[in-house]
Length: 161
Image (cartoon, rainbow, N blue to C red; front, side):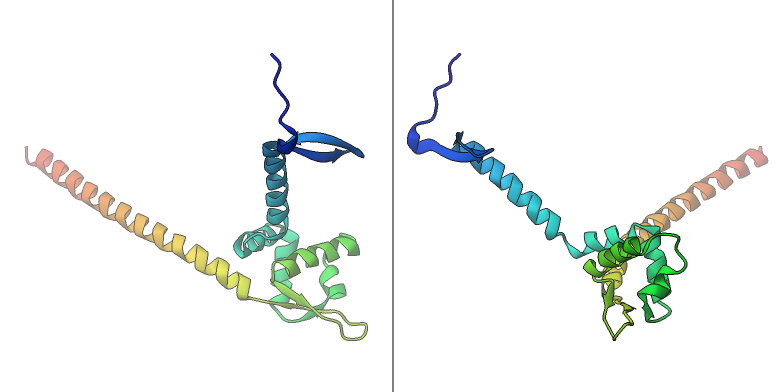
């Protein structure tokens, strides 16, 4: 079955390996929309997702735990870990992008400081679910209490007989 090519006005000419290739407008729109969305997703995620992604690594959590004690240098942060300096730098960049730390420079000393605002956002988000689970557990407790009362009454009737 032959599919007719779109008319000249409906064609979009894309460049594929240096050669202009006619592409249907719909295909081009879909292709470029997907590319645009993937680029936006890569660089513009929400703060909560970025924070959770940064907290997902145990090394980064250990770095944050150390920074909770106070400001310290990159060198001091790297000491307890058996990973290279570039790896520590990458971890610090992830934490910095998430807004969990700030880094500055004071001559040769490069101090890092914990920034707690993103952790507050995580805490607030988790708090909603904590309330939900507390209410669910309270309802379960009430239900189990009613079952226990019913069971006690049932056993009490058996004893009377």
